[in-house]
Image (cartoon, rainbow, N blue to C red; front, side):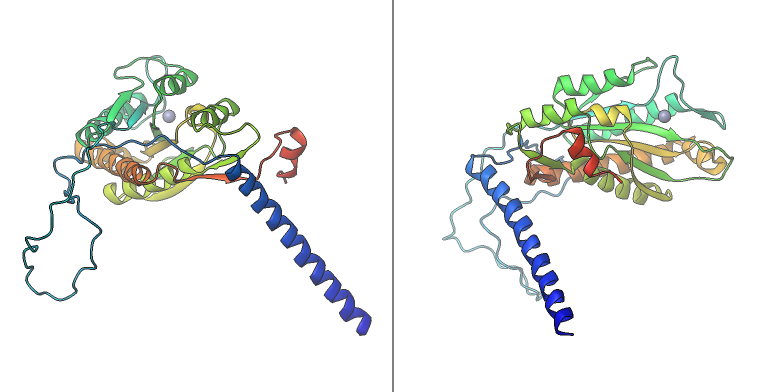
Length: 317
Ligand SMILES: [Zn+2]
């Protein structure tokens, strides 16, 4: 009994010591990065609120709002008018990518050719984003073939802040699947990861966790399903070339199943396509506004790792 207890205590103490050691190691790494002057500093942007948006006046720190329905009294005349900060006009650059094109028609079902409907949706998204004050570039604006890698390169060369690829889905059987799903790459290509380090001026030995694409996917997925009423099939991980090779946060939205007769009929109507586009654009703007407030949101230090095959294997099954 005594021996059992003491061995149990010893095990518990060892576990505690191990936990403390790992914690200390992680903390030390983080501290070292901090002491080396490393902070995650991401380039930010600011852009004017669209005309239709609710304008929040630039005011000194807000006092808690009175809960009562008492009429608002005018501000006392002694309060000096707030100093307006000059708004630097540097809107974010969003790349909108219409899937397929030219000799690559994509999927065909129920009288819909993916490349055409994807282009229509992408153009609508681009227009709505421009109306929200965002700078937009499209990988294609007509029926042109562009290789997948080149689409990512176009965005990388232009220093895009976001990349949104628009596609339409298919399933093996007729009418067996419907709804919208959004994909992101859980870890980008090495070239993209190195480019990100360069961009935020991190040491080569430092590790970084970038969860911005996942956040973007979740935000857009939520908005687009709410706006269009489509079934929410969730956010999924997949290393599609366009999202895998782009340096910036990037997603691929499958805007509905053209193999589903009902969904295909919906997608043939302008009103449904406009709702889908509005949902995507709203999600993008919501994400951009959150990043505008905190440009390093979704970027975190992790303990420095040497990226050798052995280390990578440790994370495998
Ligand atoms: Zn496609």
